[in-house]
Length: 308
Image 1 (tube, rainbow, N blue to C red):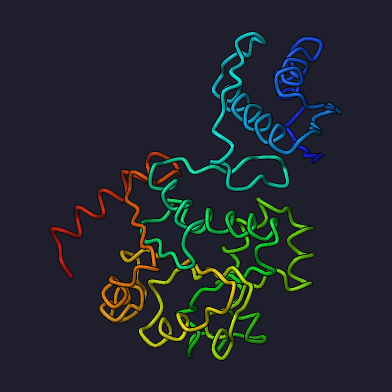
Image 2 (spheres, one colour):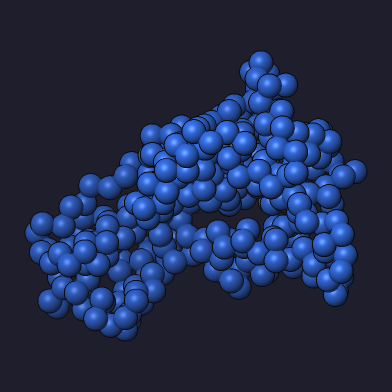
C-alpha cells in the first residue's frame, strides 16, 4: 500500500475537480480501487501502487482540462491513461513523470537497458529531467545507493577567482539549475535530507577527478562544455554496479575552441562501442512552450547560412 498527496492550486480548482458532492472522486475510487481523501485543496490517495499511479495520471489529465476551460462530467471522465510501464517516476506531489515523445520513450528505454547512455539535443527535450527521474526510480528500487549529478564550470578559472567566498560558494550559481528537477520530484525537504546524507551529490566536474564511483547513478550535464581531457577523465570514473548518463547540446558550446568539446569528440571516438547508446533529440522533442521549437528551428536555419 502506498499513499500519495496532491496539492491543488486553490479551493476553486478543488471544487471543480471534485464535482458536486465529490462525485468525481467517488467515480475514481470505484474505477481504480483506491481510497481518496479530500481536505481543503489537498487530495490524499491510498491503495496499491499500480492503481494509485494510474489514478494520479487521470487526476492530472483532469486538471489540464480544467485549466483549458473544459467542464468535467463524471460519466465522461476517461480512465484510460499512459500504460504503467511508461511511468518513469511519481513525484512527491503525486505527478507521474512520463516520456512525451517517441524519442523520449526511446531514451528512457535506453537508460533501462544500457549502463552508459549519451543524450544529445536542444534545451527543453527532457534530457536531464528524465535522467534524474530514472535515477530516482533506480534509487527507490534499491538498484543504486546514491545519485551524482555533475557539470563542468566553464568559468572556474580567473573569473571566479575574483569572487568572494569558498570555491563551492563561487560555483553554486552554476550548479543551482540542477536543483530544479530534484525540487519538483522530491520536494525541498526530502532533497535537503538526501543531500545532507550524501545520497545525492551535486558537484563541479573538476571534483570528480580521482574518484571511482560504485553503486551509483551518475549524470553529467552540459557535457558540451567539457574539454577533451575532462571527458576522458569522466569516462573512466564508472565503477561496479553503476550507471552513467551524459547529456548535452552541441549547438550551445561555451568553450573558446568549440572543435575540442569533449562531447563532440567522444561521438567519433566511441561510435563503435556497442555498450554505449547514443540518443539524439531534435526540436520536435521540445516539450516547453511551442514558441521554443520555432526559436530553435530559426536559429538552426540561420547558423546553416552563416557558418562561423
